[in-house]
Image (cartoon, rainbow, N blue to C red; front, side):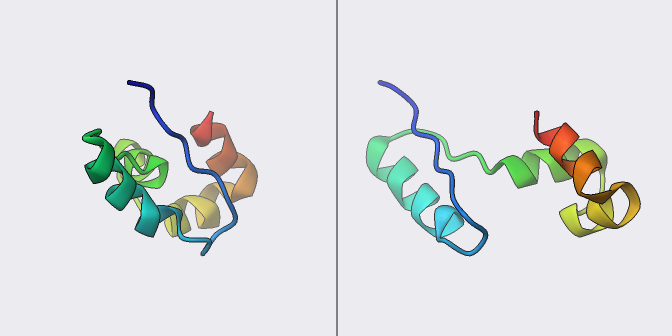
Amino acid sequence: MNNVVLVGFMGSGKSTVGPQLAQRMDRPFVDLDDVIEADAGRSVAEIFSSEGEAGFRERET
């Protein structure tokens, strides 16, 4: 089975629909922000504050 990647603007419902879709498809749900926060040891807001948007976007790649 293939994976599904949800993209969209902030507040568009990706984090709401994603877990529901993952459960329905019997697939894991992964939120990239959660992965980045765990890797960095700080919140997305803290990353933006200290590294700016460019630093955060670099972590997304």
